[in-house]
Image: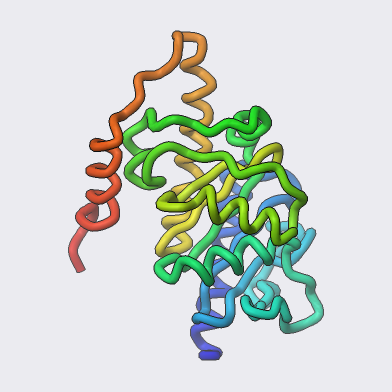
Length: 218
């Protein structure tokens, strides 16, 4: 493991965790963030600690293949989800999981959200699926979430919360923020008779544009 790279990822995970909390996307110590170090190791937020007091060195380095971790702090209980995603999606380097109120409201229905917003389909890839209800921190939840994220960058988790993934942690944080906003809009438009969905063809066009053409060329 590259120690300098590990320190960089720890710092970015810590920064993202604070930003998540400051944005009101989670309450208390709920939620978790991880970043890929390499094909074996990730850095993840510790279990049950106040986000405002976290420092980079407290982000726990975990072997994604074995679940073994370094140091005295326990990693988040959701290590299986983060490991499963990073091991199966090599292009993904950041994961943000939250228990935000609007996304959780929809998740309690155990239903997904259709493709209704431009930024939703650009960043998340289309409709937002809802992973099946399972116990937190289990292989079953990890498998269910991975299935819901097939060709998607965000998903709901039944009665639990939401999750977004990205090529960077910044992209994952934007994704979970857009997912929360989409959930709010989805709830609001029910009073207007429901939203008109974006076509599958347009979803694919918008998502390809975001993934391959959006922003400044390096």
